[in-house]
Image (cartoon, rainbow, N blue to C red; front, side, top):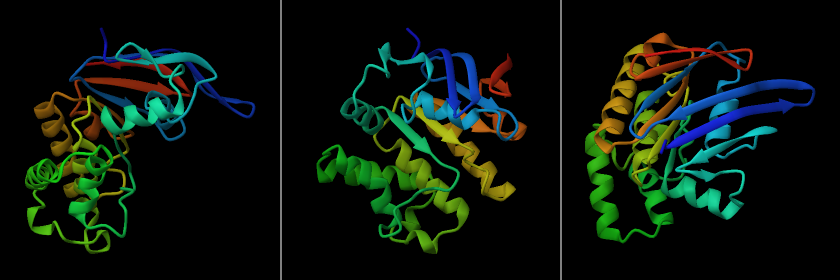
Length: 222
């Protein structure tokens, strides 16, 4: 069974079809790049795959379960336990330290303190931020903010990580470091990755590239 399946996904905003008849399958542990110019429907597709939006036509299944049939509570549970998300603009909680931002999803899941401490310490080490654990988001560089965001997204051990232009707000050196972390940490965890990008260099860390144009898939390449 595929980890994630999308069939005939179509999404319309007012009188314009932003996404049309998209089929996509993602296997466990597979890294897939959604590549294309701005406005081609990449982020809309990612939001549908993560259950943040609903299609006008078609269906998304995660581990065989239809997201359309899942109520708000079930969708929230899936996002807490099995789906991680990394955003272009980080979306860290400004009143929490780097360590506390990473710990937050584990608190929401009710992990006991010793288990949380061990997991957060391991993730801070993995993203090379052990020495910045007590820093506030305002004290971190863009690259450091995104590395915290990656660690937070992977904290609960999700089966699928969704990343929306994760290097779009970074300089080239920081972007390369974040991409290496995304590839290495998802592989280590056995997690799948679906990454929206307009960068060929970013897409190169993936096993497969799906190219979109005008809301439709134009082709795929390994």
